[in-house]
Image 1: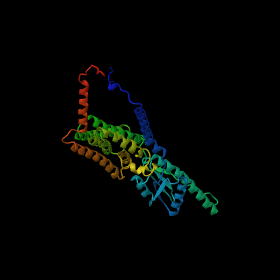
Image 2: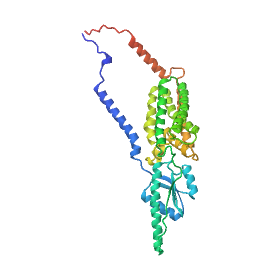
Image 3: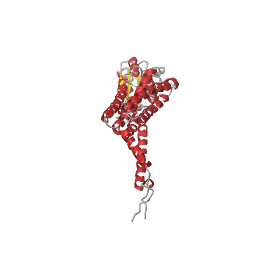
Image 4: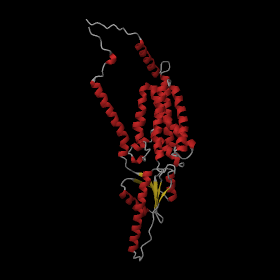
Length: 371
């Protein structure tokens, strides 16, 4: 006589064990690559910087800067210093070089601290070059006295706030914003049954979360500047743009849709969001691509709402709105698709209940006899 082995004590086949282990190693490698690649490959390329002054001086300055940092800066000619300041304040450029009788380099640490430091170095090089040219001209003219030293100051047109002088608070706040949107979408998908009820939960979660997080980041930490209500609205829309697609995928696919949220938002969109570095530092075209996803749009929007009220914020608002609306539409579509029948999650719950009942039924303790 022999008894059938209990299925609950059967061991996982060694082939499956090895396959799972190797698959997990692959997942970890992808995660490390996704987060490390943008930083490792970060290099300034075609940073828009305004330049104003006489044509000959502009040509000489462009050549000098290109020798110092090849391909790093793409110059945009403007009429004068006033136009250069306007271009910085509207975020058309990261800084400016003003040439002429009073040369000056304009920076914007609020736009990008790394670019501001780069332009400060350009100011030092430009000062050295201008004085060398002046000395050479004086010597050629036979002047008995060396010309006076010409200073090229670096002026921070839009500086970071005193409460966040390095910009670390603003940068650090964006990852928890992405994580909060994901966790909200996942938790709502797991805890609430019903596509339309999830939509309501996402709206409430995003609205209250926007008010609370804006209060913490602006009123407590000083990481955000500008108008509190605009910041709260931006954060709320960012949360909805991340959470709503997750609940929308779940409405269409069941709980398997939860996995799409971390893949899209965390592994794909977040590394190319340009939250910590300018999008021009990321290998083209991924810096621009990142602005079409919620993390990148949210990072741009929160920076511009805090420091650049004159900038056109239409694009990030539209991107976040499109993702939030798209997620809600997916939920509505999933609701009507399952109308007249059980929701995917309800069916899964019912199936789990049936299995639970099966385990509670009396078990025949008599072992089957094999002849």
